[in-house]
Image (tube, rainbow, N blue to C red; front, side):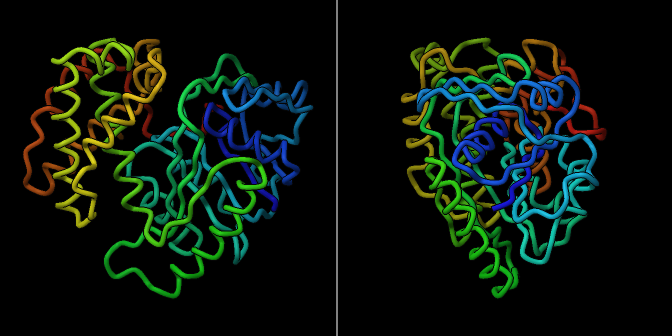
Length: 323
């Protein structure tokens, strides 16, 4: 497959790197120092699944140089999705798909506003990784996995969903050839909301307390705060018609128990470093969606209020950054 990676940060670099390593035709869209390193030195990935180094890559910061692709994997930050949609619109043919791997549950709607519903599917990735420096990524927690499939909102056209599912299966095969576990869902909303429940809650509690996952999960008071935050998102998901499993909170806490003790979320690291963060797309989105549906989300409301005072606000528009 010909695959474009838009956003060569931690997530984009890991999954794009695995696809390139396996022989897929990968083109990178990046900017700044990341672009220069990809072109001149390539990509280095340190991983629990095996380290690898790629030679200099085909990379550009000019949308018109990418050409038609079979799939776009979107690895930019959540606030960069609308601008990214405008950049990639010219890369799509009638059989192309766009796979967003952002945290949160807003990316599909944002992409559809620019690209229409046909190419846009839903996606979830499970991995703990970070950018060490441009062109150098470290994967240090969780079994890397991608979940993808149609985003079946009420009234969604059945024929379009079936076409999207077939395209997702082709990309799933590419991931499998690259040694990445991937699963195609008939409706990926459940997987996306499960990830949202986990990452919005863990990110906010971790950022407020400054604790690693190991410390957070082992202290009764912070573990209970995390459980209550997750329960609020569970209630919100059900109000949106997303049928989460009855044990979703217990399983999410169990997933946290299995992470490397030193793990932290990308939002937590961004806030600590004074970088723009996904606060408003995660914890803030819980608060806004709850308010729209007439629900209470006091835990997330308090966490969001506490973090807004020290979090650098993400820009509402602008070119996708390398991460």
